[in-house]
Image 1 (cartoon, rainbow, N blue to C red):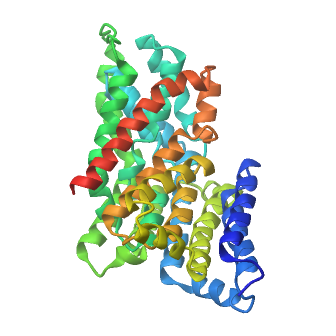
Image 2 (cartoon, helix red, strand yellow):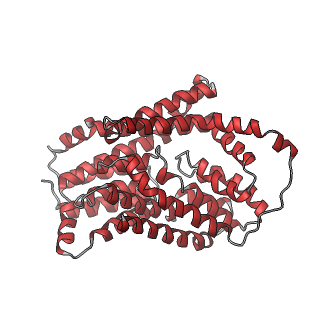
Image 3 (cartoon, rainbow, N blue to C red):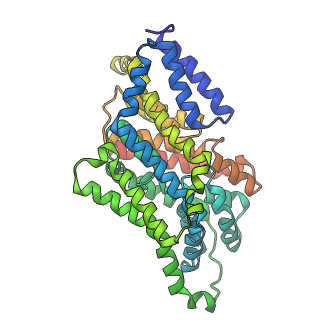
Length: 413
């Protein structure tokens, strides 16, 4: 064993993790550094190379890490080709109702899982929000909340994929359980965001009406790579061969999506490789590996046995652990990935089914959504020039209702 008691080592390592997160050090570096520090403190140094090797050559680790890289590449290519702007603009011309546009556009931009991505949809929300004469804090809330409605049911969400891989469940099983929660998220967002807000008077725009077919065509072409990627991933799951359990379904589907994007956008080589020159794409990929490495180290230390004793003695209910631990970590790390990757090794004593996995994910995810250090929230508040407190007036009730729904789904199914 190492120089320090495992529990003491966890406390020390997680304090360092907290400092690194506070200093806004990249999550990839933070997770890997925490895993290595924890291993050096509490494990035999001879065991560390073996744990790193076994983690690195695992098929699940390789497929999920490469799939994460592919998803980030696809996202950046959408941005570089301007497809994401064309997609959102064509959608806003097709849909005439400003409330529906405001509900859909941030979610469409949400297809790009980039840090602070809510800033991309903010100008569109501001424009449509003016038509409804929304206050700035309402615009900020609508932009923030609706951007984050898509991820719990988005098959290409790397956090969803990683959660399924870490817990041995499948993405489709998680999505099925989370559909009711997302529906509640949308309804809550619509009610709170547009309460007592009348629709503006219809204004006929012959130019817009006459170009409906053109807008539909633009929307279809720009959405096609994402649509094909989702279809391929779902089809591979239906075919069988248990590809989803090792992450090969999303891995294959993502690179099919990239090929489709190359074809329909007629992208040149310079634009195609431009995302590869950015640290961002590697940072998220490195974080995916760090999640697996930290999980392997925690498992080797047997940290979950401590919580097993608490549950067995009746001191703490397992549901409380499933709901509170990931949620608190989601808030503290301002990252759904960070909350999940740290929680799963800790909660490994609880039978991890699609039921428990979904609760862990939703708890961590919702904690991340309302975290004050969440980049999307920080950028949105700054863009709309309003206070965080005023936005929380809408965010907190939305969080409580949605989290309550996740708990209800857990208990009744």
